[in-house]
Image (cartoon, rainbow, N blue to C red; front, top):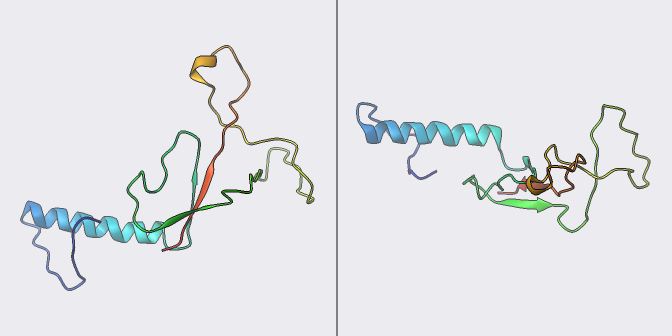
Length: 116
């Protein structure tokens, strides 16, 4: 992401600079494989956004103004029938300053889509 190179560049792996360039090239290629344009990323509460992690590309929030609530299949989840869902999404952690409270913490997550 920081180093500039082209497909035809010869990389000298006998030097530190060459090894850094090679590493950056492999890292960038792997990023494109696992996070191509139109891929998604779910940012859970307390986690970093794509830009905070230094990810390349342009990432756009999805459903930012809709206040969507969703469930995944399994564990007795009810089928969605177009009406409201019974439960909000909960995180797996508790508030640090609320150690006595056994109820899960209500927080929001953000869904991102890579658009460029």
